[in-house]
Length: 195
Image 1: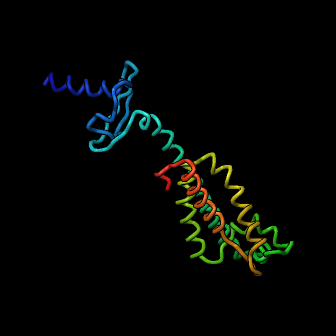
Image 2: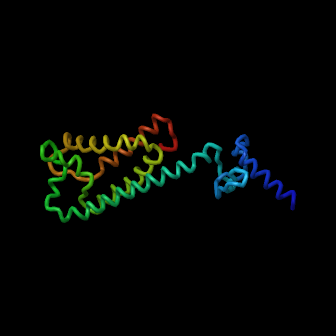
């Protein structure tokens, strides 16, 4: 019994030793992390997964970025839903749409992504924003913050310049822009996980 507990203690101490490679441990997914009295961190891992010391140290930051990106995406979806249900009460919905090549349609560059024509239209854009917004905010948080205003104005201005006559609404330009940004950054950074 004493020998078994010493082996367990040695295994736990090897996890705390930064020189011991975690890839050689038989258990690799974190189940629990606790700090001992002497300041070492004990990590309880699940069998069958792989993790390196750098991955274990980066895990809390990645999880925090994921939660922040997911919450922002969900907040955006709630905002789109509120705008969708409120636009039925607005008598001037067409005034907030993009009207290509007409000066009064320029306001739509700012407002058109917040409006949708049907519940199906809203649902498809909401799903895309949830997936792509969370992915972009988790993997490329700084680039997403810088690119999102450019995507918003670029999609709106492109629709205003190139669009056909009529009224254009919806966040499809933003979702396509997010998808293109993720794909392009993954190619430039050679990040296979994002592709």
